[in-house]
Image 1: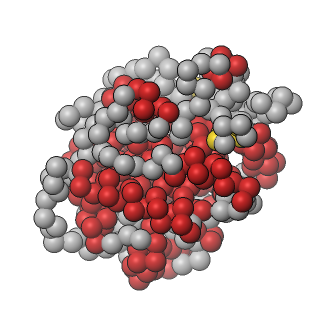
Image 2: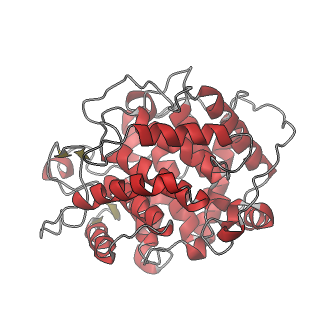
Image 3: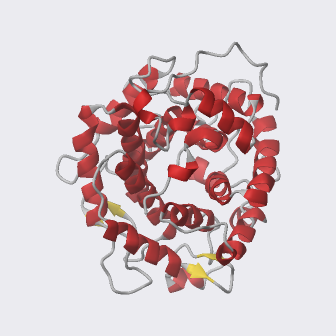
Length: 391
């Protein structure tokens, strides 16, 4: 599996002057080049990002979505909504917006319009989807609003944020209160257990909204921080997926992605995840750093995060925020695993159970897989980290 030789680079997006003092400043110009050098990126990672974005651009439907818009999952709803949100985030991460006048501006514009068009008129929820897709879509549109100040985005984001706020658990039970579980346009479904992975996406969406200038109450972030803190399992040295006894008594008591997701969300909420208090959780993540780009057994996928792109994505964000030797080890492992595995057409092979069974990736549509890997390889400059803090 060898990637193609580097093509001639397209012009880089130019930074709008008003972004100079925002967390998005590193996506442009000299600040970007400095961030790449400082944090361990290089020409090879940038080439991989460009190839991946070209692949995603070529797989976008004319109506702006990625994936099979007709496919409905009983648990996750129309997963093309969340898949499209992730792809849009990948383009935004490189500075391609509807107003950037760059090679992928039209791609970003179509994706934005698709998400706006599927927003439920009554609830503000993006499509008939689960909390995952709604959080991801809100995250992407709020980031786009911060980058562009497109007035047409403000009201849809405000409605989406209000829906997230309405679905935060108000329970006094510390195992539920402050978190989010599954919800759709009509409210909660499946059960009443808040989940760390869902909560982390909601925190990221609300953080993105606040950075764009949309009001989010401090109390919402405080409650989310309490929930995530209470999800730590000291005996296992990691964060629980949920406190559901049936989960904790099962073979897969812990889903690995919950730990880096919680760490990253807590870092946004003001916690110093590089401190000794989080040493065991960081060790849990780095012990499962990428080692090989191949499909693993179900047991290895869950217990060891082998071939688990969802874990790798959050592991990249969490270790980058932690910095130091944790980030150096992770970054080396990530680059050694992802770069040689990229195909000549810019995509990555499908190795992840979530990609195949939930996101519906196929050999003709590797868009979830490719978007997740592109987002990981954009980490060096996606945010100016000292400014990325909602508390």
